[in-house]
Length: 579
Image 1 (cartoon, one colour):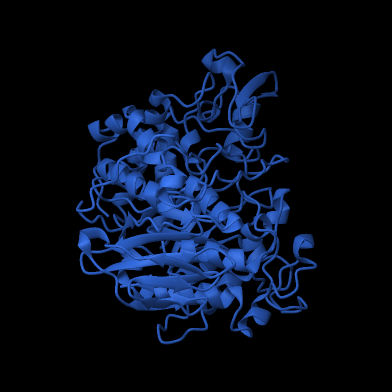
Image 2 (cartoon, one colour; image 1 turned 60 degrees about the vertical axis):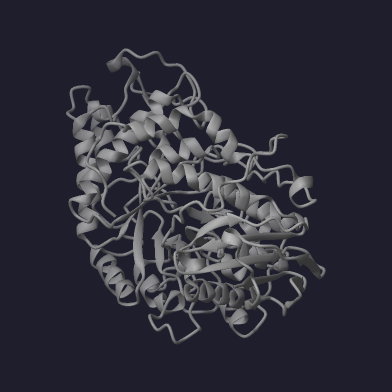
């Protein structure tokens, strides 16, 4: 979508940063007793990384904040703000599929498995049906995870070649699949030639590409996301926010900004459809305190500059940022002429907790208000990026204690909410995974015995060694499997425009075990109702937005619901779409 070329924080963004009071209103749920009779979800925090690899973003408590004061409902007649969307699938290349027998997943392996993700034929239902894939880092790196890059314009030789990347993009596009890639510009690898020269020679032209305390006459003090950011080397100290092996680049240097924009446009010219921007809020660090408004404004201004450069190559490029915050104002600032989306970490915590506790969380109430702010900041141009877990968090099935019914309901909530849903590879078959980080990035399982010719083996897969049935082949054979449920929900999302693209309105259910919300486009309005519990539940319907009466069941997923005289009965763990 088109974006302004301004690199100065706009009045709209600065206003958003200032209205912390509005943020409190937006993130406040109404009291649980007055809304549903249940308790609001407090959210669940994943453990922090214990080793110097890339999963260092801090968690910040509750997914949805709860205030004692009940906030006024949003205007039911407010204009519909649609969010055209598609489902994305996050792939750790090393773990996905191996085309050459070395035990390491590669780009050719992903190309071979594209039909699993989407075969390009809407008439078939054996594929997952996703519309986009996010590739975790594919650039050369000394680390298994790839978040410390040594060459931004090449492909990790473990994964293949630039030609393999171009083939993958071409074949994905044939099937209607967009390809976005991780772009890690906050820091390089300590082994990057730029840094090596910078450290070896104080007179190097690359010396000012990094932040050396002695050169800038800065005190070696303060803290960052992972503790002290300063690391000693050759009698000097440099900033590495996450780890000594990841020295931060100096974005006050216009040469650095110019190079990073050039790298972005290079990959767009290779055919990628956009980027997931790693550590997006850490480009400029405030080492003396929590993120200040001024620091955030500098970060946003850089990303606006980056966005403007990308528009010159592809104005439709999809850019989603990792801004690990639960504050609507903090995330929303980046939606002003910079990102299309920011990952919704607070919602992720809340959805998992709702599935685990079998209680409505008030998520729809909060999203309705949050999206009003995001729309104001972005001029109606934002799309949320929603997910359950990613490569930095314990896997959702492990958080849900390997309960398939709870996993199915988490998927149902995710895939019926606004925005672009992101599915972490293996989530759809119930892979388990707990930290350390290698444990949440284990090989995708294709067959029960692991003897598929493309099975990766770089990591033993200990979390899933005794996880029978958590493989593609087994789940394809069972009509009640988690994989089949994911396919059904994604297909339903594509078939119902209001689910795919619609706005959201809260719909109080009066039952703490039921989550309900309306999804609305200019041409369609539906009511989504989830029975999160293991027993049948009933609820009395009432008029929806615009006074609409819901009189028919469009689809029932998980069980067969019954509707009569305005009263709906839902079997255990069932999702119903009414119209």
